[in-house]
Length: 308
Figure 1 (cartoon, rainbow, N blue to C red):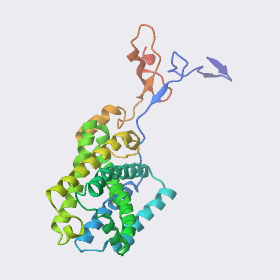
Figure 2: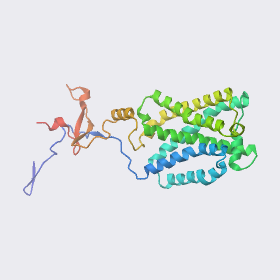
Figure 3: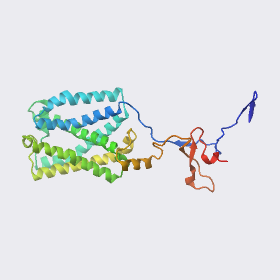
Figure 4: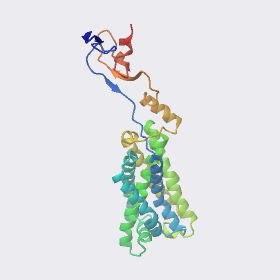
């Protein structure tokens, strides 16, 4: 004890560790709290769905595609892009990953599709015609440029954004690789492929505007979407650690919640005096696993050091 003007001050903290090394405290992931998070996520999901819905609206004769693109989709995309620059949010990182992997999955799908279109001549390419719906012209060369930009950024990127957000909401980042890939392939079949076939089959001019429904076109389009779903699922597996850190809510699936609690054992637990794990060097005569002990939140002292 040291004495100064009649005041007795302890020379060290009451719970000072036997060793002088400062422990490393491992805490759970920080939770994101932002009142715009839910609204922003909803806007991203809306933007992800609109490019495909615009095609259906065009084919069914509800709203011209150039009107939907000019008045709704492009302004919404521009507004969200401005928010990303001037008011960034962790959700934006998830959207960026989903956009990139969706475009890449669409590219791999098109390697198969264009091979069957231009080399094997098994069916036609309706993307240039779709592009003419956007720029209100009949020039198929310009239509091809516009159509493929829409296909990769709007359709492929939009599906990727939607899948990443839905997958994180369900908690797929905590589940097995097989579950992730099977879910992404199923997502590519329904609602994506099923929605495409329903648009072609149910609209009055769907087969003339897009492609005829035959066993060949059904099989080729299904195989293409299976490829798309497989690549998208593999992309999510590659990015799930990164995007999982930015997701602010607990998983909706009970199995994912249980798996997530095992992965992050301190996530969501109530605070207490001894609430964090501290990693200490193993001592002689003590198992290595005993180096993980409960530590005081104030000074880092372990429960064992405070006994007696």
